[in-house]
Length: 630
Image (cartoon, rainbow, N blue to C red; front, side, top):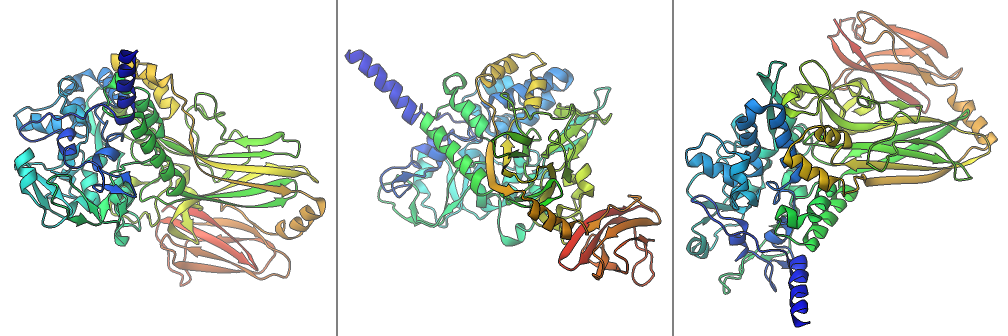
């Protein structure tokens, strides 16, 4: 019995505390266990309100800590090699550069020309992922330059550990680890994160030859094209939240009790609860030195990030004739596109309408047991400004295409985006110097409600109108959900058509998980359709209309039809992409059309580009988008 109790205590201990972190070293790096010796939460050290907030405790169950062990990444790398075997060295070196930076960088320093997955697998240090002495040794010599991106971080052999606090007590770290702590401000700059989270991947043509580069993930450039750089809001603002509580950051030496503020919590969370759950459920198989409680904490932080800091969801509605007109607004609160980074993620709107008998009369965006969206188009779902059928679903995503303009799930075949309607951050404009790197692609380009408000770009939101048939004298309940999924089933299904050991390992783990989306936000309300209400709405709303111009695009003339109530004065104004008014028309008739010949109010011809036209009559206004091509 005593032996059984001892064994159970060991199991329980490993579940709650986790296996020991590695302490392996090389001439340039030390694994995370070395740092844990002095930077772990204990008593009054690295705790806040009795909670351990030490870097190691928060970091060890993140995707960054487990970057080299991530089974989806390992499977995808093996798939790319299987599809492009001649490029194995290029593929594995590029991927390990950021998923195993200590292994890769040490190998290059030792004179190797590349670094392989097999070498990584045989190195405990390399498997420590994006670890302490990787990030804290990065210099700022090339920050923001092209040379810094795609793993172009600069780490030298001086064993300098950069930190955000002045006058560090250096001797204990020097004596115990061989590293020297030095104060710097650059750890709080987005350019640090951009060294790996800005990734351009090579793509090949039909002959297997490298033909160019593809912006596989560029959240840094998305952030640069937003309001946040001028507000001093960086990657770390959201992903490493600060506490102003003064913190003692080291356990050794015990008499050194200097309190530091602010303290950056090493949360490193985004929205990937699915893979965090998968890692948690396969810790032993993957050799992850963490615990279930660590992962539960990281998953809870991730879910809180999704629910509280990611979007605003709102709606407005009216009953017109026998139609529920529902306008859903989804506003991006992040500093990059939503979703961002690797294009295997998606956000979509789930809209469900039920009658008083709880019978569903309309549902767009529901999903099945595999996590796939029901009624999704065979290839991909286009972007919508208006949805009139429940088989239409608003999905925000990046869809890759190859050199033949066909959809692809293979990164080395991805030449451009076939669709990119991921919601931009606030302040995002087409005037940005590097817009081609972050451009909107597909139907969203011509949607006057996508990232546009009052004719001005940069709203950071999208408005989608649902027109849903309803009956009179009925009460309906409406449920709107914004759904997030970090791993698209279609991406995984393509992966499973290939055969490698890594894919088989991941497939076994994936099949044991439930790939349901996270609900970022929801709105619920009831709406009645009493006859008198419908008629009252009709008496006002049916008399207003603004049609899409025709032709569109146009050159040199286009026609705009409109309708306003008799006796009401109105006008149509035309704005350029900067929001400047260039032409206005006074509306003399209640039902008519105007023709615009591309001239401004002074009779001068305007240039090619995107223009917006807005009708205003009484309290009614509407706006649409048009394109002039010369």
